[in-house]
Image 1 (tube, rainbow, N blue to C red):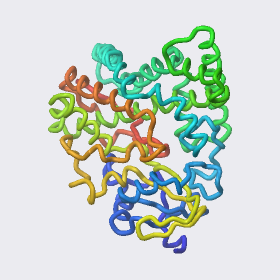
Image 2 (cartoon, helix red, strand yellow):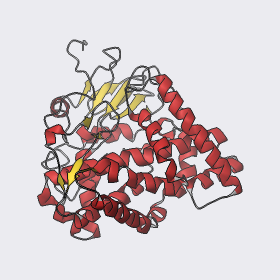
Image 3 (cartoon, helix red, strand yellow):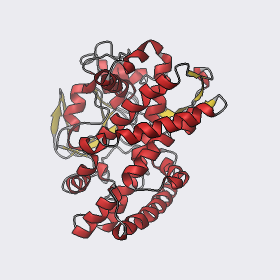
Image 4 (spheres, rainbow, N blue to C red):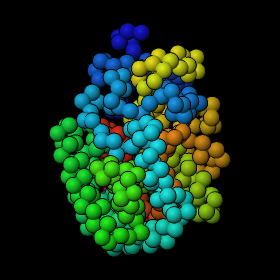
Length: 400
C-alpha cells in the first residue's frame, strides 16, 4: 500500500468528543483491524493493530519485542533519545525479567493494600485544603497531581518537598515536543538526585522501594546505575499517569452524574466502576509499540520479522466484539476488567495495583465530600494534552 493511501497515525488527530478515540481509528478497527499506517512524516510504515483480540495476541506474544533500539521499532518520534536499561518497560528478557523481579515484592497487592489507610488520610487532607480555598480552583494543581505524588514518594522513600523538582523534569519524558537534549538533561538530573537517595538508604534504610533497590545493588542483582534508572522510571510513571487518570475520571463523572452512585454501592461495585473508567479512558493514547522478532501471523495478516506494530489501547478498549455499547460509559459493566489499559502479558504495568487502589479510594471520597462539585468553565475551554504519550487535561477549573 502506498503512502498516498496509507493513513497516518498521529496523537493530535481530532476527536469528535474529547474523551473518545479519534473516529478514524475506530473506523479502521471495524473495517481494517490490522493495517499499515505511516509515522515520522511517512518514513516508517508499521502495522496498526486495533481489535482487542489482536491487541492481546501481539502484547502477549514473545515474537514481539519492546526494545526500541531496532531500526524497525515504531517509536513515537524519529529522534527519540536512547532509553537507559533501567527503563525496563522498554526491554526484553532477560533484562526485563531481572529488573521486574527486583520490584515485584514492592508492588504486590498485599503491600499495596497496606497503603490504603495512608492513601485515605492523604485524600482527606488534600480535599480539606482544597475545600477551604476560594473557588474556582484548578483541580489538577490542588488535588489530582499532589495525591499520587505524595503516595509514590511515600512508597519509594522520596522527600515530597522536592516535588516541584521531580514533577517538572518528569513532564519532559511524556512530552513529544521535548528535544533529545532536554530529555537527557532531565534524566541526568533525576538520576543524580535518586542516586544520592539510594546511597543514603545504605546507612539509613527504611521500609521503602529505594531501600529495596539498594539491597539489590549490594546483592549484585542489579547494577547501581540500573537501580537508579529504575527509580527514575518509577518516580515519574508512578505519579504522572495516575494524576492524569484522576483528573480525567473526575471530568468524565461530572459529564455523567447519573453514574456517580455506582461509587457508593460498596467496595466490589466501586472496583467495577474504576475498571470501567480505566477501559473508557485508556490514557496511554500513544499506544504500546512493538516490533516483530520473527515472521508471525496475527489474525489474517502476516507480519514479517523486523516490522513495527502499534497497539492503540484506547481503540482496542472500544471493541464492540468484546464490550457492548463500547462508546457508552457503564460503571456497572460486568466485564470492564477485560480492558487492556495496563497492557497484557509479561510487560503489563507493574504499578496497576497501586493505580487501582488510589482510584478506588479517591473517587468515592471526592464525590462524598464535595457532592456539588462541578466544572467551572465550558467543556470546550478545557485544554487537553494532545502531544504527549499520556492523555489528560492541562487544567481543570472546578467549583462546588
